[in-house]
Length: 307
Image 1 (spheres, rainbow, N blue to C red):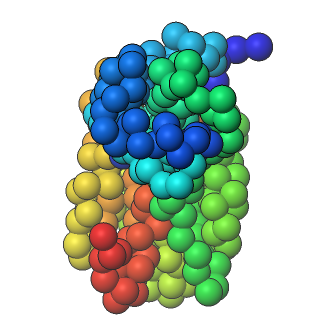
Image 2: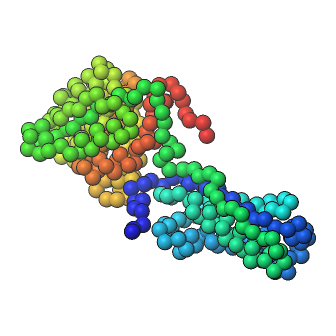
Image 3: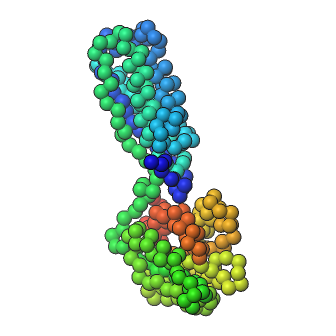
């Protein structure tokens, strides 16, 4: 048994909401409203306990990560024979905050129980449950009426000559298929400017692919020419895509700063340069998918997503 490895995930806004319910007697409700409970102000103490508990969730539950919380909020509602506790937690991090919201609700309920048990014989915690959670990859996955069509170009002299097996291109294909892309073309080319340029033009102008991903030719060698070939064919650069990939990679290996990969649009096709190494490819894929899907809505005239 081990704690789940979330190091491959990116930081994103996470939000979770939970509720807890207690059954109480009508006389107790009146005492709470009048602030006459012997142990003190029930809601203020329960709120403080809930916030402290949320921040200590990883100390209480073995496999929970230490999440840098940005918000813990606790509200209470009184009705006939019922106290409803509403909690929310928010963080910008790699894993969700549902356990923090649930822990806050649980401890608030237990604190209220402890404060009311001397004066209420019907007291009962009736439920604790998660209402909603937001954030993470699943929130950003988009569906398309028809599968997006893609191609993969591996630029490598050694692979093209059969001296080395291609692992990076095959990893890209596997991920594209996992993301429901239809992989139309898979090419292994030498590090040749004209050859790469010609194939990029063919795949965009003639085949009309939605996405072309290249692997290799993004480094500092005199034979690394994929970036130059890509620059010569794209009509508009999309620098944020490549910046996101490099930032993500640099958090894991400093060598990511040496990648010269670019991305851009030709016609209605998006071209993305990825490194040649398998690790760099995998990290770039983790950084870009599924968020890059929104690019195809924008290229197709769909505009920005609603806030």
